[in-house]
Length: 126
Image (cartoon, rainbow, N blue to C red; front, side, top):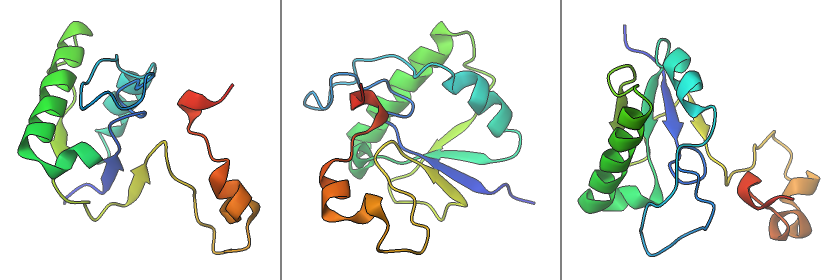
């Protein structure tokens, strides 16, 4: 039986992304706590990385190389299996730092024009 998919955004969820977009350069480190979470999650879910970088083979290869280096530095390269997709997978759940959960109410404050304009991912909150 196949595991349900969790779709993981790359920048801001795995990659620390503290300086924002830098022309495609992947400069940061793993977001703290990601590896212990992923070690547990991969037992029950298929972890698929999908990002705006996924639109090119070079972008996917850059993410794979960076992640493998980070996993090796942490001594976890053999522990966690990740898949990479060039299209958004049919996920059970998506984890993304630039998303708003929709709860069936288009009048929710976070979906108002002001709420949308003022949205900040966790990396930009003070």
